[in-house]
Image (cartoon, rainbow, N blue to C red):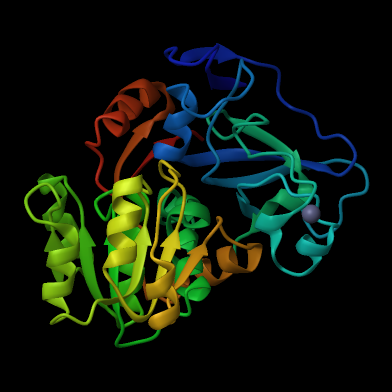
Length: 343
Ligand SMILES: [Zn+2]
């Protein structure tokens, strides 16, 4: 099969021929149709996320099951699938409780600790594949369908994790990024008032189009003051921080109002200080939100199938142009998600 291989960190992609994967016991192989390209996997290419090489990256796939190994139940050849991002065990207490991101025997990520979707075929443990709901027209928009598993499901999970209710005010830090823009979209869908926070002025229009009611540029204005002004001094109900530097986290915590929740996702994951007195006095909370459950992926697929929301894939290029796509991701030049067309 044709694959885009990384031989090491900070290396260019190499288009290679690899043996077609054959499924072992409990495994399945899918033909890859499209695969999303975002910052999470660019971190691997850039060497910011460590793994072993050579590696085929990519996890936001739309594919079709072509082969099943012995002992696989619940999947059939011809099924249209995407992939769950974490290599979960499927059997621990957390997997069985619908809290799969907390799996105690997790083996890393698809496309990082095992080969992923930048190839004609992908082999995974069968339970890592997620069958698309029948109502989802994945054939019409395969690239959009493929990115639901991360770009859209992650923001949906945040709505659930922080118990975000209609009418609340939600500030999204890093709103111009791939996940941030989809968070704006999902928070708007949830009937909240959305404040987009991003230093990239060229992404502000996209934030407004995705549903932001107001935009704050921390390179021009003090974030805490701006968020307090926009809420007439009350502070925001929820801050979702996709950047997670010490500065953004501390500003986010200070911008919270009564019963405010600060949601911490990946990003720089730096340490920060928050005032325990405010946490107590105003009953505020800090919440980590780690990826999504498989049920969240299905729920996000259902929302797309019903036409409630649609992932923003702004550029779709052939697999051979992966290098160009990743250069653009590294520069922050992509709006929403990019995707590669493979099969
Ligand atoms: Zn588990």
